[in-house]
Length: 242
Image 1 (tube, rainbow, N blue to C red):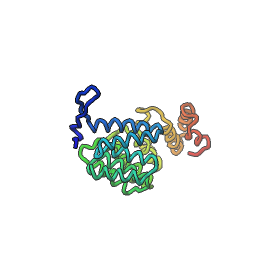
Image 2 (cartoon, rainbow, N blue to C red):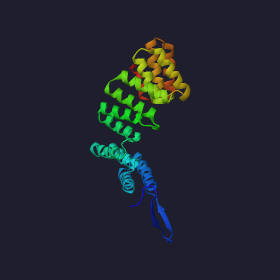
Image 3 (tube, rainbow, N blue to C red):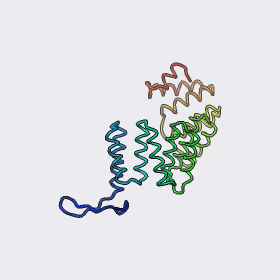
Image 4 (cartoon, rainbow, N blue to C red):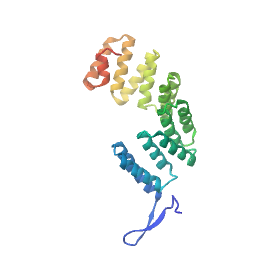
């Protein structure tokens, strides 16, 4: 058998020996497959991801990618089988644990999902800690646990202070809890870094309405109209649904 790291020796058309690196070949197919997947070319995506797995059957990124493919095409049983296979081969891999957690959350298996996000975070040298905390926060929100979600978003921001989704989600939770000062500070920080976005403007409109500062409501509504006139948020504003 050829080593995954050392590779196999093949011969090219000119008779020269050439090393075939299975991981590099798998990575190339993963890249192609995911690009096809994002463009909606499902069959080409599957063909390339299956080749990636054929080149390196125990490679966690190939297993992750094919699991994600089946997740996207709504075949959860096959997706879970590949995630579990990846976990058997790489039981301490934070990326696999995080991605499996995302899958479980989408299947509305919220408690199981949170366990896997936390297991990913526990791994030494795992570099996507803020993403897993954010995923745990989003999953907690889906389960209806706002208090737990707030804690996870705060954790995400402690690792990555300008993580945009966590900033906006935390601002929304502060508004829902009538903590308007904290929400205003968070949104000011967000807009200073990223500029006014449709979601941040919408949150500012809601915040200032609750605060009774209707001049500010009009200001942010005018910005929303100027920058995002066709947005769902602006249509809600026009219908007074905020």
